[in-house]
Length: 174
Image 1 (cartoon, rainbow, N blue to C red):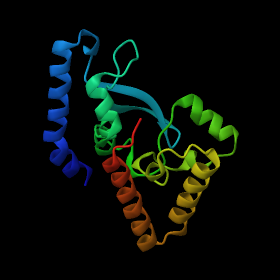
Image 2: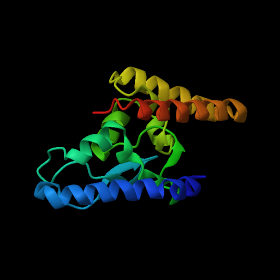
Image 3: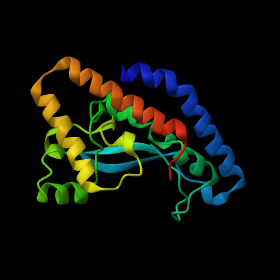
């Protein structure tokens, strides 16, 4: 499934890379690699998560990066992480090691048990920064998995993907 998505989205990814390349011709501050691989943790295992670069080396958003982030297109390369088994299509967001350790100290055990996902219970709720809501959504998802009801899990995963795509489609990103 992820491999099919990768093939279908590759022309779109090439357009994004081309736009970033054209911007780099006119804006020296935008000259950097097209991708970044940030360290993250998924189910207790560290890995490097792919994203399109949206900032200059100085940390300011590039012109192209502004639009890529606004529509959450910077997350498309994470399909590579899904293909190689470091992430799943649906699951809680992978986080940085420091944040992961902090969540475990607070008793957020779902992060330890679930493989991080591209779409998930929280991704469809962008803008909600309340940690208690995020924790409850991820804990509910873990209970649903443990319950073993395949049909309910399929419907829930479908809803997570739909809500994530809807959030992306609204273009209300940072």
